[in-house]
Length: 263
Image 1 (cartoon, rainbow, N blue to C red):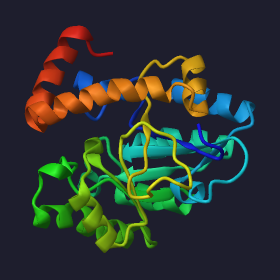
Image 2 (cartoon, one colour; image 1 turned 180 degrees about the vertical axis):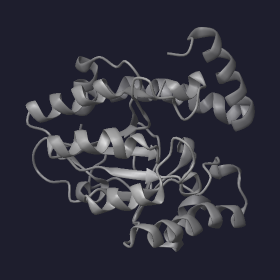
Image 3 (cartoon, helix red, strand yellow; image 1 turned 60 degrees about the vertical axis):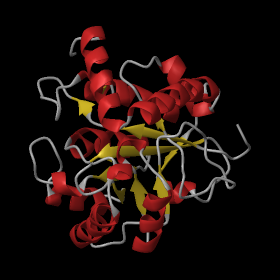
């Protein structure tokens, strides 16, 4: 991993005992970490001298052992579970919020989102309705990227500078609209560490999956296992390009239902 490079971690909903997940599908649930598992990861980082940064802080690529913590979707567990754990560790994070889901069951309310920002966490945008952006026309892209930014800024009362692409789907048109809207960065799902040489409109992130052992988590943060993970991801991306987003998702959903029952 290049010197001063930082791995950007991508989290989603946290599982709290007795609480239903926002979505029940296996394809979604595999990205949901138990609250206790997330706490163990943050404790491990803190105990080993790591700092947890938000996206804006990471762009300075400071010295030391740093990892960037991001959450996608805007689930209510961002506020009730993740934020307290992060505060206890003295870490920051960027919460990428799907604007159109605010106030829906399982998701942040506008008041909770405003409180997250008030606690010092960075708020980013994860689109208006969470579509695959590469499937949209120009009007749709502006609605999902520009209009969502404006709505979030009205709620939190501060600039929303960072955007993450739903499903990691990104192309030149997405970047063009994001630039025009005034975003400083665009985050994808490409598995890579980011450095000063990385295009800030193509930041990589590593999705954190359920039941990742702490030893494997440590290797991810160090960047040591990214090459293997990237090779596996490339195979999936190739299949997605060949099959198209919709058909790929149907095949993936069928295989996951067969392979792994819901937790």
